[in-house]
Image (cartoon, rainbow, N blue to C red; front, side):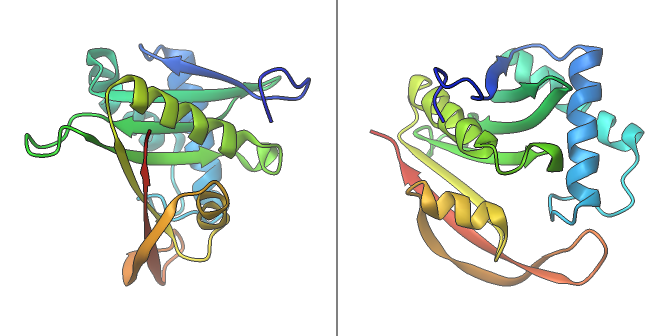
Length: 178
């Protein structure tokens, strides 16, 4: 989907996190965990704990150490992705894509692809030439990254837990930005 298509998601970069942004982001995170996504949190995830996670990133976002994008629809924030720009001094060219999340109500509408393209463009504009990420093996996200041209590096078994328990393998990807 492109921004000129009628149903294209509205993607914006958040440079400050207000209460409504935090509430919307928290709702997306909770929905993803409830839907079974392995994204660092266990089920059940409370809205308060999810909001605390986003509040914990607010200073980093405001300082520019992390790019944060949100996709919105008629109900509010429906998806998000981050690019962690601050890296060790021997890796200034690299960024990490993190917490690519799409609410279940927004899946299948091109929101994940639009968020990823925004993250790539933002990282490129910030001078990054390489992005890396990891995702649950076998997930919709893994298929999305492969479809959008990311290079699969490999899989680590038993890397994390699924939100309701049980071990989850993780697949690592990279993308060179030109």
